[in-house]
Image 1 (cartoon, rainbow, N blue to C red):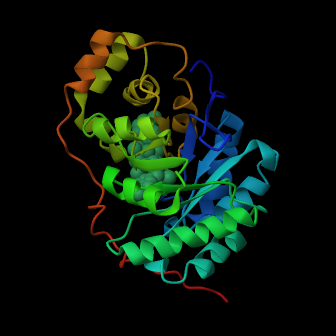
Image 2: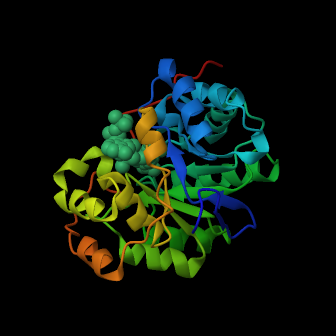
Amino acid sequence: MRTLNDAFLLNNGMKIPQLGFGCFQIEDNEIDQVIRWAADAGYRYYDAATRYENEKGVGRALRNCGVPREEIFLISKIWPSCYDEPEKAIEYSLRELNLEYIDSYFLHWPSSSEDRRYKAWETLLKYQERGLIKSVGVSNFTEEQLDKLIAKFGVTPVLNQVEIHPWYPQHELKKYCDEKNIKVIAWGPLFRGFLKEVPLMAELGEKYGKSAAQLTLRWHLQQDNIIIPKSNIKEQIEENTRIYDFNITDEDMKRIDAIESGRHFGSDPNTNDGENFTIQYNC
Ligand SMILES: NC(=O)c1ccc[n+]([C@@H]2O[C@H](COP(=O)([O-])OP(=O)(O)OC[C@H]3O[C@@H](n4cnc5c(N)ncnc54)[C@H](OP(=O)(O)O)[C@@H]3O)[C@@H](O)[C@H]2O)c1
């Protein structure tokens, strides 16, 4: 990967940029400005979700950011508490985003109920047939959950978005996804903001003339993770794109790999039913 515009080929022939922009925890009154900065800095993949409660703002900002729709790769996600009424939830996303179609739409978490999971997935597939969703993916799925989904529907998700950073690299899950031709997106790529607790990243960053964040993002690039760092700050949004002009040596990659600790922030994929959030449908 040499430039910010490089993209990965998905198993359905679509392409996704390796560097995307995470839209979680950006308020409606700041999203227009933040996405304009991101678009100007060159980000072309935007990572949204109904759970982030800002799809309307993300859609508005993307319509007005000066980049043609066809150059943007937009992901959004249905939240598990909506799996009983998936049509309503997908219609909600489409209406709020108001960008004609969604490039890839995900099950945000597997849900503890296979029935509800499969009902939602089946509905995603129907919307894909109608062209309103261009591809279907998942998030926070384990190997076993992927195996079962693929066996039941004969459809392989194009992407699996899971928590990955040097504390929690999820090597086995990544290997499994590689074998199935499912690309992996790393959420929380910058330790979810806990970078300061990882002095090695700053130490190595200094060696390469880079920040701790840039060093961390480069570690991801060198193992083919798709990354979606989030920031509200213009300088950091730009800084996070300047990761293509250096290479971390094998030896230093190993030093980073050695800080794997299992520490992570996400819920258990077998039990998270997302009860803490429901949509207030306006229809
Ligand atoms: N599928 C899922 O279940 C799931 C779960 C969580 C997140 N996500 C997705 O993944 C995206 C990224 O994950 P995340 O937002 O949780 O964590 P993250 O990107 O790892 O970390 C974000 C934090 O890092 C800080 N930061 C960003 N750039 C920096 C820099 N150059 N130097 C120092 N600090 C920097 C940000 O601060 P400032 O904002 O103050 O700049 C923010 O506090 C989300 O936005 C969302 O799209 C998905």
